[in-house]
Length: 122
Ligand SMILES: Cc1cc2nc3c(=O)[nH]c(=O)nc-3n(C[C@H](O)[C@H](O)[C@H](O)COP(=O)(O)OP(=O)(O)OC[C@H]3O[C@@H](n4cnc5c(N)ncnc54)[C@H](O)[C@@H]3O)c2cc1C
Image 1 (cartoon, protein in one colour):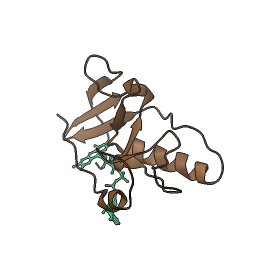
Image 2 (cartoon, helix red, strand yellow):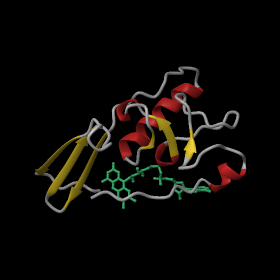
Image 3 (cartoon, protein in one colour):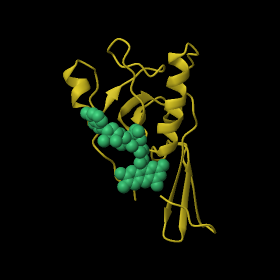
């Protein structure tokens, strides 16, 4: 089961950033406002692994990878965001791991559910 969140993007929207579900960013993570970037849960982008559909990806991997990509872009190494989506979550003695994006039958997600040996936070 997965549930989502409503991103708190009010200040950006009030400032004029476009977006209906979060804040829209193009492939170089820029919002529609000059020099304003958005990453992580709040950033809605056309995702290769969702067949180009505009999605927000709510995962630690996406937040971390987007942070790395945007930091490099600000330093002049601008590359479109292409990190492959993956996700893990521990539930008691079960570890859930997914790769790809769940878009129903047309998506790329593969899921592995197994027991883990070393308890980890999260
Ligand atoms: C219950 C729960 C379980 C989860 N489990 C998993 C999991 O097992 N695996 C996984 O990969 N992901 C999991 N996630 C998702 C993961 O936590 C998020 O994808 C990730 O934290 C997103 O990082 P972020 O930096 O985009 O946003 P956040 O971590 O939400 O950070 C945003 C920060 O901005 C601050 N903020 C908001 N508005 C303002 C403002 N106006 N001014 C200043 N600061 C502001 C917030 O207080 C917050 O600290 C889970 C999420 C939840 C809620």
